[in-house]
Image (cartoon, rainbow, N blue to C red; front, side, top):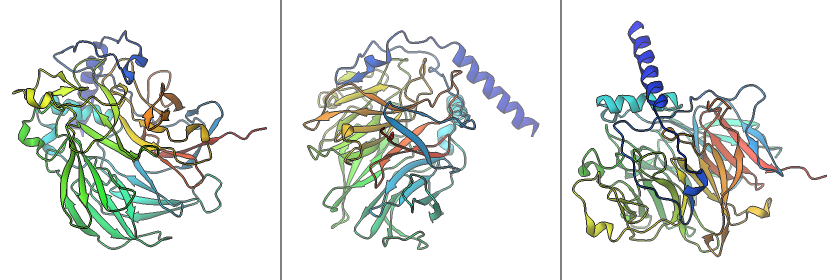
Length: 440
């Protein structure tokens, strides 16, 4: 016990020391948003920027702040690290209560141990609940009145999608399929392994997301990289940093798009029909590089990682380089701010709030490696003719205290059956529901 206390105290001292010596950015955060973000010269440091918002949870009576004209309420509380949401056709809401799996090879060495301390202080790296819960609002008052354990004994589950009567769940190491009937509140069957996914003792970006195409014939699965910039060797990146396509009729899988460091949220843009994804970019180039982004995902396209960022800006840390690949790298469509950890993505297709129709709602989990902090909010990006058409608008803020503590951190976003916006908060252990204020 004394040894654990000393290690904890030492980790706090190390983290605070790194935080104290961090130089704050002088660049406005707005410069790293939009179709033409500012990309200054990279700044290399002996140690990465560390500026953690310690995870505290919500004080009694405190909630996030909605945009003018909107209201927020707790749809469900008392969850265990809720990360991802999926709304079933009957309106039931599935929530993945999940965290990182054991990955012993990812915390070796001084840097690995420091990163583990950082993640724990930021509210992650605790034992995963490994379950999906079902939330039901039977009287449609915006508060879930039924909660059941829908699936359990999973392996760091994340993405979920329903095709016909089959529910697909993306565990960290495999895509699994379960039989589903409308109205079910629990599935007891073991499920069928559909596709193995890269995992193992070195499993740096562990979350795997999955969505189906509108026809229900193919699935698209995100697999993040196994490092920041291939520092563990390019062999460790086999089958990673990509979006995979799985043909359900043949069972054949192939890389759909590559060079995506850590893709997470995906959705189909309603005007163009194109697949879009949010992607977390690389670290350790300073406060002002590299912007996370969202982009339309083109079949066969390469998006740069690890050799270049934001198109063809070469990352000289990667050895050996591959200029022939860099020459093919596609510039993303829209930057979402430096180190914002943009994870959630859904296009608003409902009618309750027509001002958001066809635009993108994005859950920004928030930075641990930028000063000042960035992200920690839910934003909206308007779209016209299938493309982003303006500056982002804040939908839900107030996740940070005045002292820089994290009351909560938004992750997955979804739209419920009434058209309200649901937000998974994995530090506050809450699902927030955002809707229009009552008009007089």
